[in-house]
Image (cartoon, rainbow, N blue to C red; front, side, top):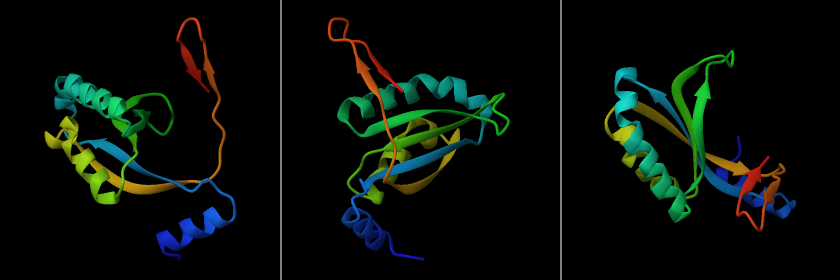
Length: 127
């Protein structure tokens, strides 16, 4: 195993992006509570997005890809693991106990995003 900071520094020296983000896997504890808390959860996510702390978020399917399980994946931008944990704990889904979460650091090194912006319409498509 290699220490996180050592690996990050090696990745940067080799030209990788080495963008440090924080990933939350949010899993349901009480499925009956989910729909009642969803509006507050979505408002919290919009607040995080507006402040630049939410990178991406959305629900996960089951392993077959057929059904929604109530679980979700959330990616935060934060200055530390502790800050990311505080953001996750404040999510109404987690605060209420409707969901629990696992938090991990994620070092983004490779990949490709395509963003198409309509200048006159203001619409954007991410693929």
